[in-house]
Amino acid sequence: MVAASRAKERYLFKRKLEDIEAAEGRGTELVTLYVPPGKQVSEVTSYLRNELSQSSNIKSKPTRKNVMSAIESIMSRLKTFKRVPEQGLAFFVGHRQSGADQTEMVSHVVEPPEAVPTFLYRCDSRFYTDPLREMLREKDVYALVVIDRSEATLGLLRGKRIELIKNVQSLVPSKHSKGGQSARRFERLIEQAAHEFFVKVGNLMTEAYLDLGDLKGILVGGPGYTKDFFVEKEYVHHELRKKVVDTFDTGYADESGLRELMEKAKEALSDLDLMREKKIIQAFLDEVKQPDGGLAVYGETEVRRTLEIGAIDTLLISEALRKTRLEVTCPNCGYSGEMTTLNGEPGNCPECESDLSVVEASDMVEELHEMAERLGTKVELISGDSEEGSLFWRAFGGLGGILRYRVS
Ligand code: ZN
Image 1 (cartoon, rainbow, N blue to C red):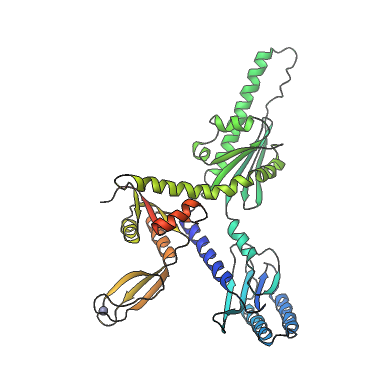
Image 2: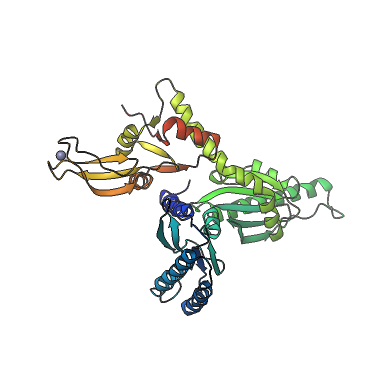
């Protein structure tokens, strides 16, 4: 289960990306700049100074003007940094189309959650966000285990990066009986040694993976039947066993086997996110179908009511939900309250019909997230990429919950 705060962080980053990606220039006049960590600010400035003089050759006068002002804007933002931050920087600056014949300056400076890989300058009619999109994808952590009777290797998969944790060799003798010993006795010794080796690997897995809060799943590989035997017989801690995605054939059980395992599991992994989403929605629908409504709640009023008293175990929110939560007061009669709107407009006072004023406005997904975090409620953001996810959006308005207990 993804921790609520991390899921929120990820959501906010995704929203920011959507904002950036929505901008469109009239010409090729939106400037994207990625600066990796370790780059000198002065180096970047002189690069931009050069781009600035190049862009004075642009034929179209409005484009030239917009490109030059974007570059100048980046240069002045850059001055506020003594050095490039730990993970680098990304700039998205330019004039986007805002009406039939109008443009509006947009400017985003992003300190990304992961290191910017390479220096990049681009001027186009759209901002270039692929490197940031990549970071969004790279958050998932999987355990990798390859095992046969002679050795085992444990690792972690973070996005596309493999980290080796440990390689252990077994003491299981190969199956050639030595002269003098009875074959049956030798067989028993082998099985005993194999058993001890599997116990040891199981313990290493517990040590390495059990406390990883964000572990999404465990992939097990290796040549032959050993890996399946290892998973089926209870060598893996029961909490970890629930997370085993599948077993995959690999040629080796050493470090190279980890890479092979990742390649083999690719398809299974891309289905996994959707599977997870399907399962959650299915659990929700199963409750809805109960004659007494089961443990499901939906509709904003009902969800808020049960969330506030801490009765919701898992809160389900569609990422497509775009609403604003307002805290409002009436300057005329002193009324105060909260409301949800689509357009962020507070409207009129329910008491005296005067125009309400906004005390605080927040994105509703974010606001619900914060409330859930305070109350120890799990949050699942539903993408809508699965059939179930889009049904949840259409039929339930993208907001629902599974209760811990029935609430009257
Ligand atoms: Zn009023």
